Each structure stands twice: as C-alpha cells, then as structure tokens.
Image 1 (cartoon, rainbow, N blue to C red):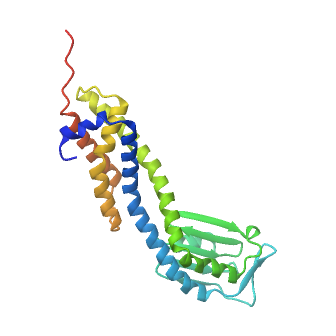
Image 2 (cartoon, rainbow, N blue to C red):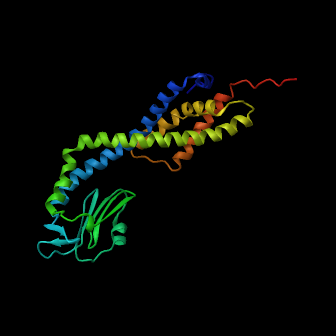
Image 3 (cartoon, rainbow, N blue to C red):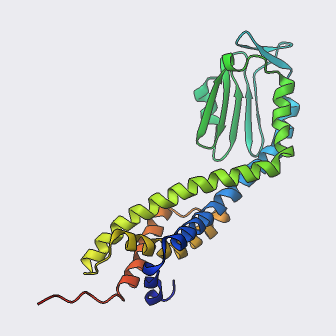
Length: 249
C-alpha cells in the first residue's frame, strides 16, 4: 500500500486470491461492529437481571395483558435498557420512542402490545401473538442471554460478517465506477475487473484506520466519504505509475 508501483501489480492476481482478500477486508470491517454488539449483549445481560427484579407478575391471555393484582404504570431505566410496564394505557408508542436516547434498548409492555427496540430497529408484537406468555417465562428469556453469551457472540459475528460482505462488495463496486472515470481522465486503459482489484486493495489502509477508530467508539463524521476519497487517491497514485498506451500512427 505504501508503494503505488507495487500496488498496481494486483491487476495480475487471479480471482481466487482477490476473493480471499475480499473476505479479509470484510472481516476487518466486521470487527468494530462485533465489538459494539458484544458490549450491547454484555450490558443487556447485566441490566436485564436488574430489570427482571422489577417486573410484576403478569400473563397474556385472550389477547390482553393481565396482572395478578392492580399495578401502576412505571418506567425503569438502567445504563442500557429502558423498561416500560403500562397495562393501564397511560403511555403511547410515540411516548416510548421519545424516551429512547442514544443506544438504549427499549422494552415496553403497553396496553395493546409489546414493543422491543434495539437502536434503530423497532419491533412490535401484538398480544394476539403472545398469548400464554407469563412474567416467569419472560424473565427466564431475559436471564437466558447471560447463559448463551458465547453462542450469541458467534451468531452475531456470523451475521455481521455476512452483512459486511454485502456492504464491502457494494462499496467496492461503487468506488470502482468512480475509479474507472478517474482512469479515463488520466488516459489509462483499465477494464472494470482490473479497477475493481485495485480499488479493493487500495481500500486496505482507510478500512484499517476507520475500523481502528470505530473499535474504540470513535465514529468520524462522513467516514464513508473520507474512506472513498482516500481509496481513490491511493488508486490514482497506483495507476499513475502505469505508462500511457502509445498512440498508433
């Protein structure tokens, strides 16, 4: 990556090696996401035990939330979870969403359904889908996160890596389109496949740098745009070493 004249040699690499490097780049981008997700799982596991102690005895039957004795609506907030229990219809879904700040996980038993929200991923369940659920089974579900922590980490990493594969491919394809324009402007004759290889390898340093920052919770503004600009600049330095084709007289 430091020597552009060496970077341009990736044009001759076979598809198998390029694919392996593609997997490596996707792996790099997965690491900070996995670290953040693990932190979320750990926080949820810890705070879930606190929340579980506050949950009153209830059951869902005939499509309704029923408590064993009259219960006042309440909100319980920890460092990672905001839990709402409102069988009396005092709060709406909009109220619950407004309570969510930053990366808080929201769990709300409202009058007409269960609302669950990871950051930016809300899920609604009507009580018709939850007949038979009791406070005991719900508490067991919350506490089971701790016992399945290792399995959850593996599942989470696999899912995030698959997502990163797709995003890395789309990012590289889009960057290659801009790179092709750059190669035409500079008078270099590279086809799409050759530019794709160069862009993929040129994105190594910016991907490593962004992944390093993200792993410590540092999210630069416009990081995708910054990564693209740096990638294209490295690409430009590489193709600049390619001699222009001689014009036929």
